[in-house]
Image (cartoon, rainbow, N blue to C red; front, side):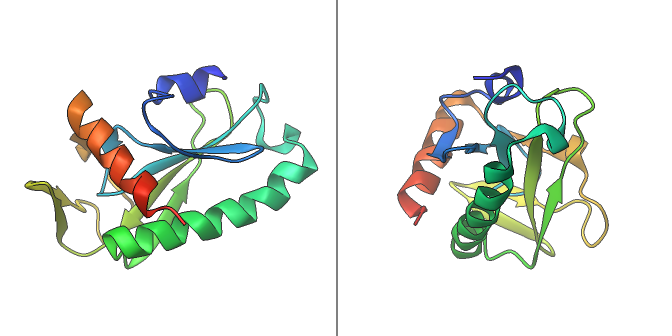
Length: 142
């Protein structure tokens, strides 16, 4: 796996693997259900991904949105591709909502609503919480 995927705690955070993409839990939860959609392989530019990755990305996005709609009941969803620190193509998938959501006794406010998400205001999960939330999302993926 590429360095970007490993940075986001793969394989512990793996929710679903596709041919060209991985869906990972984002350990720092900007909002409840924040994910990383990471391209597999060694490409360091989005345009260098194989054509098949772009076709598959549509299927992955539809599946991710179903998962998060059911789990978080988001109002909007943001896909943020920054690639300033982590070199391989990936998107931060951030479900957006007014107010906050609660999971396992933890509050997850959407600090930036209705403007840009505040990536620095993320809720840091413990290793046990990461495992539990990842398993919860795996069981809800369809």
